[in-house]
Image 1 (spheres, one colour):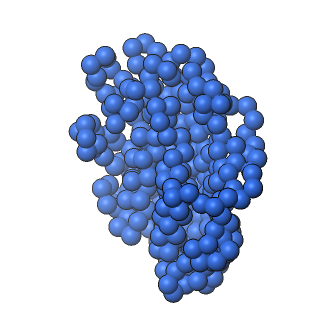
Image 2: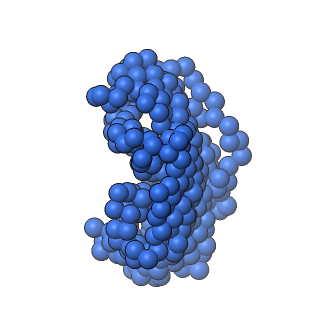
Length: 277
């Protein structure tokens, strides 16, 4: 993590970055690439877990992290310019799965988690995570809630994960404050999955007397039909978009464009992808 964050500091400190046009225009549908096929398979696995539970008794636990999962698998906001947002998004994805999975208190004080028949809430829940390569430990604080309606099969969530980190490096001390804010709702029936998810990531860091910031928003819209056994998406669309709210300093819109992917299924395992920018 340390090398990834530091790699972008020089470029990020050059000038103010930003985005202007936030609309995504799509081209014609194309055959999927290997990367897109892998991303679709990963999404289908997550959605299969969501659909495996009866909507009247279980919420869609996999839904909050699906937008960031797809973005990572499709290579969105990848490379030097994504530091420090990308390491935080990766960490947030891991902690959100840990905090909103079946073991609702794994890695945190159980007292900060409140669960009843139709909701789970987190208040100041602290999760520490250690980078397996550098050994650096960062701490994420989780606040928010996940609710579901047994009568309609609707799961909704609004979670804020914040990170404050101080890291000593060869060149000095890096301090960072960052946040990931997943929100959304999804409705699961016996044959359809429909919903919208949004994940906003922002970060501000200081290093050697310089301060920089960046922000990116990822949205996901689902309108899918599926076969239950074995689970397979059979119809409908999945649309993922990533919009820079503040590009890293020194990077232009041409270098870091807003991006979109529109998957459309015509049958089990049969889909095309339209690309947007």
